[in-house]
Length: 85
Image 1 (spheres, rainbow, N blue to C red):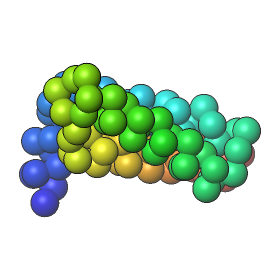
Image 2: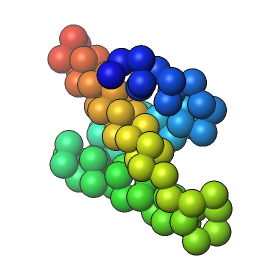
Image 3: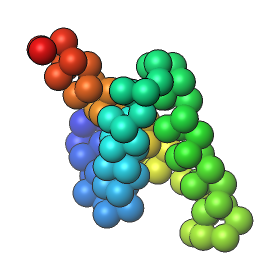
Image 4: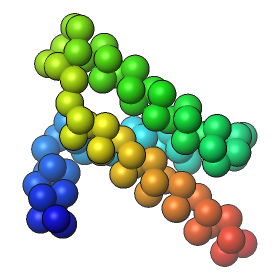
């Protein structure tokens, strides 16, 4: 399983999805609750995939997976730093 995730993250598009969602979650958490932040970040990622479906390379569930992983890592980093203070 980890080898499979590693192969996905090697792809540059997946890296962009991961990093953008991580940054978005780090940017929204100081202003919104965890649930609202997750909804916002996932909505932005889903909107991008819907746009890709109609105008880009097509909807990709692996991009959504990278979005979720990025958001989770961003939230984990935020709360790790928050609780260390």
